[in-house]
Image (cartoon, rainbow, N blue to C red; front, side, top):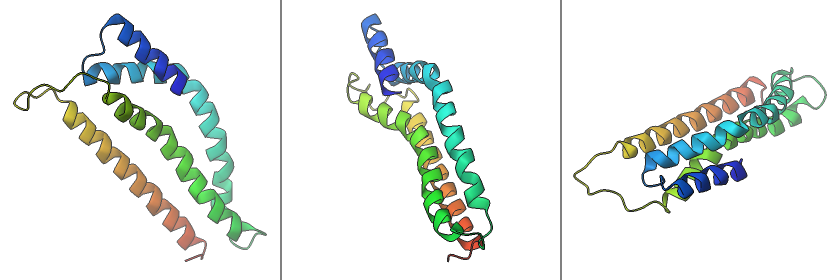
Amino acid sequence: MLLYLDHAWEKFKAQGSMNRIEDLYAAVIEGAVQRIRSKIMTLCPIIFGLLPIMWSPVYQAGAHVMKRIATPMIGGVITLAILNLLIYVIWRKRSLPAEPPAGSFDGSSSRCRCLLVLMVFLLTGIAIASAYFAWASGDL
């Protein structure tokens, strides 16, 4: 994923159109779209392979141990898929030209806030789901 994001970054930079945060978002989307199929083909087997472990009855052999292993793995795989792009945007944002004066508004700060709120919501949901599965299995 990082290689394709870098290629999109370099393409936009070579065209001279990497001046605003919107250009960075467009480059990230272009790079991510090229790798979305392989990303989904990696995520789905991991998630669908671990979900039966999460839903297995507690009385099965090894279920109490495997549920504790599967829970953070599912959460980690899901958040990593999204955090890759968010961290790349934060990292490359430093290379952009200086922001316009404080009086002007281009909408980029509200977009970053929306992404941050979305990430907090997603991580909270994963934590709640993990706690529920631990509670339902009798581990808590």
